[in-house]
Image 1 (cartoon, rainbow, N blue to C red):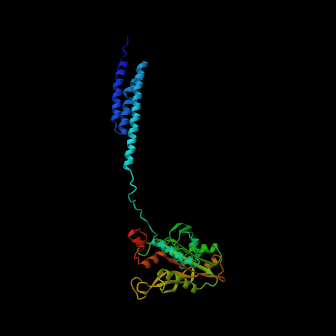
Image 2 (cartoon, rainbow, N blue to C red):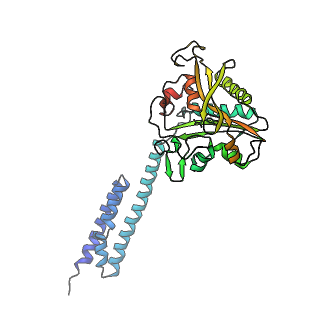
Image 3 (cartoon, protein in one colour):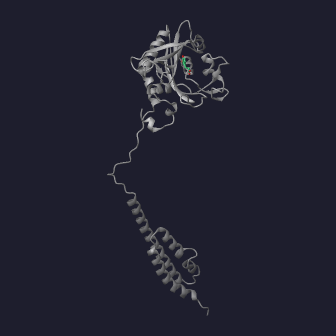
Length: 342
Ligand code: DAH
């Protein structure tokens, strides 16, 4: 008769195997260890699986399957225990003490340039002006031609102006907003437009290739230089103090005739002469003038019927002068020690 050692061996082994496996499962203290035990006792290469494969009789089969079920059940129970322990551990670790003060979230505030921008907008809204948006990307048509700049004008050079392509350019001034405003409505027009402008300038204490301007335009019947002076004086007094003296003196811009430059009496020395005003007694704020008839005609307005004034000033310049900020870069480099002061 053929010897059938496997049955006896399996039956004996089965009990020992079960005891060993249950002990290993019980002593697994992490899910990883438990998995190692599972592979060892139920894995494809484990003793039990091998024995199950070799089964020849029903009784052995039942014994081995019972062992397998016992091991599986023990694994499930232990896994649930370890998972719960894990979860409890995590909850204990991550527990939040709701009575502790929270982590403070630092609160920001508007940048000085944005503050001045809104201040200027408010002043003009109070005068009944519209605040309109301009385009930071313009065509040479709006940036130059419409503003009465001949094809030879120096600002048209790519050495001064940042071209995106032959017919797209980053605006060097907010003045094209005047043209868009007049093209889109009939006179009277009273508008300001504030925003970024771009120039191919080397960075130094008074230059930065991006800065902000406020553009203003008033076109109506009978507008004169006196209206311009009165308006600029009001703006300068609001910005620099109610009894600041102001003056205008002649200048040149292609899109205004006559053109002027507006000055405010030095608010450091009151006209005596000091370093801030470079011993002039006056500080230059920006350009202005009566809208050139060519510009009015360009947008289809009749210079016999209406006239207007315009101005364009730098916001960084206003900020630097008002707060004596010696270097324009301070407004751009985001140093909180500077920014928090305003
Ligand atoms: N656009 C000029 C500049 O950037 C400033 C300027 C001067 C604007 C006179 C005006 C104006 O509207 O009338 O230098």
